[in-house]
Length: 176
Image (cartoon, rainbow, N blue to C red):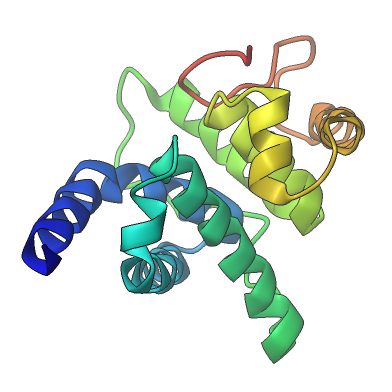
């Protein structure tokens, strides 16, 4: 039975690793911190996989662990945020350069948001979760999700480099 649970966990990790790291990157702004954060959350998930795998949505459970581990990173260790206002330089220009610059501006804008607003905006608009799913992931009410999303989007709209009047959404959709 233990080997079967381990196989299921490894299958979950293989299927979800990239998406979890991407979410962690949007929360941390640093690829190395994102990988560390994802590994930390998955290590914790591994210890309780027998219980997590029985839930309706193990991915949502692990995503919440990811957000919690990110919050703990600041709370327990009092680590200063390492997010930067400017994304790294791109190596070359191509036909998608405008989109790359806009994405860079969006990432830089996200870096300026407080951690809670950033988490709400990332989960709601980049990960395309519903308000209820974001509330569950963050352990707060849907009203908090709505207010934090509103405040976060308002700040992003004023960030230089983001096209005025265009909806701020990450990649997969525009929310539900």
